[in-house]
Image (cartoon, rainbow, N blue to C red):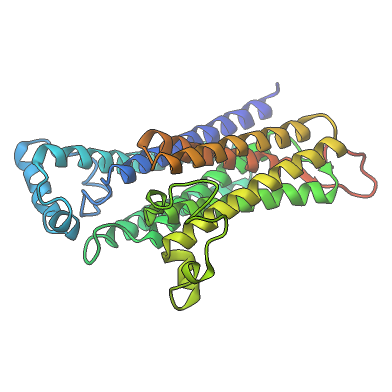
Length: 353
């Protein structure tokens, strides 16, 4: 391995480490939501909020702030200071991880830049990712702010935006790291298009899952494969809100039904893609990725069904959320590793540089 390869490997390891931190943060964020801890810190202090309260007086001051919001007044008025400390620590840990990820990205990035280890094209890509990370911090506070005045929980629209932006950042980092490892393999255009379509569908499904979480729709219609007594609910119940588009974001039946139907579509698409790869490519990393993706989507679907049937226990719900990020990671690596075959390129060969 020459000097340039060693430098590229170091940059890739750094990117994958940041992606792993984001994966962990998404799980902590999920636990924060499932324990109803997300509104326990009612202020946004990016610098001075790094440390938790260090005295009983400090804890009481934070608790008094929490008492001013509707969630405490309408849902948690009997909460004790000890119980408040528990939910506070979840939200504090989630915010702390955001700060850690920012430092873990920026400081090595600046060091690699100073050493000249990052090419100009990659440099701007990484600055863009850093900018998205900064935006994510603001979106997180925007989400929390939606639950501080007139609601007892955050807006499902803002929750979904917050989660999907985290997933976009995660996918961008994984894509960038994978791109540095090897040249993409040329395959028939339908294989390439199928991989990209699956990646997009995974992101859409994650968005719908966030709407389900934000509306607590997983606590309703806890049967499978039927929902509301049938495989396809009555249209009058699916679209009883006006204007019609609101049902896709605010009607718990419609949102859960959309999440189910997209899951079926994703599973069927992943299986068909794997079969197509098996018939066309027959061996190598393209087939391995396609088969693994179909298998992982199957496991993820099973986790989703169990989470629904058991009415969203924290362990299963977090496993389902972790599964979504793993599916996203594999779909990203798979899509990045392929490019449409040219007329003169042999099947399965690396693309021309």
